[in-house]
Every structure is written in C-alpha cells, then in structure tokens.
Length: 87
Image 1: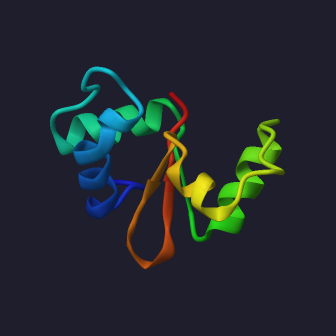
Image 2: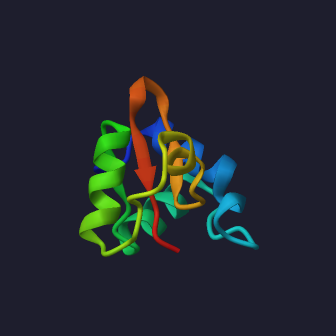
C-alpha cells in the first residue's frame, strides 16, 4: 500500500457512508484505489484541514474546529491526522 496506511483505509471503509449514499469500496485494495483516484489527502492537523479547504476555494472562514471536523469530507484518524476525501 502506498500513501494510505492501513488505519486510513480501515477508517475510510468503516465511515464512507458519511460522504457517500452507497459503498464505494469493500476491501482495503478497493479503498486504496478509490482514494488514489479521487486524490484524497492526509493532513496532520485541523489547521491543515482549514488550509486545504481555503486553497480549494471553500468558504470555511466562519467554521469552528468542530464544524471542520464534522464536515462529511473529513475523516478523523488517530494521532491528530485527518483524511480529506472530495466526493
């Protein structure tokens, strides 16, 4: 597995319904392929989540940390990391 570690892939598989109505992956390999295809990003802090959205043109100025963490595109990982998946 490349950029996406096992924790990242398992978290995405478990929580993909927060972003998609139907499962887009059922195995670790499918999850990795999907995340690579949509160029999902792993960042190390909520500040980097905010920065990512700002660079993407999203208006997140009025969003507090809880709202950022609760965004459907944001998957919380361990150690303060976040997976951002654009659906």
